Image (cartoon, rainbow, N blue to C red; front, side, top):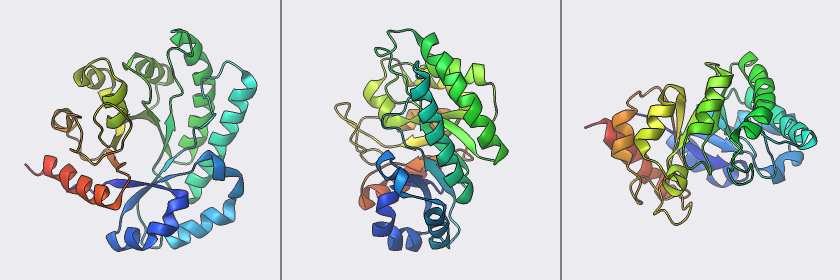
Length: 253
């Protein structure tokens, strides 16, 4: 049986804490940009104490307005600062991994993936060095990518066992123009986390597993290693329960 992590924004933890503790859930805690300057080390230590049932923890880093592949060095400096701060939180929470957005949008970079890659390598080499020193893995999530080549380039250039991919099923379903098998073929050795949610290809709806059109059967026939981090990103309590049940049905057949 797989025990997945469940995505919960930091601001929602108080609301759902009783349910979280009752179910003994492992967590992916999302720290949004708006709250970042309101938090300090003491707040994160207090959170660790509140999670006294010793759950597995991963972190979803802030992403709004941040650009790891920025051409503007000042923008990249701010991004690195924010990412370094989230690693400090992750260390206190003894997180296994931190998920970051790739920041790649092909039209913004005028299809010049090498421009994005150049800035990205500056950011990620610095961040990965800090993370690896704390035993924290870095997982880069596909967002607007319509095919996997830019992420494959980043993985090849980084060439680090501490640095890999968080494959997001909902984002693939919404944006990809190539097959699931092409993504898996390109990235399988680097995928150590999955973001699991569904949609009908019209919006990033974060439906429960199986309530949209994503091919989960195909995914789990290719990715059979139960040691990966499986993270549920359904946005309701019922959606989380349904997703956990359906996730395990794929591995119990």
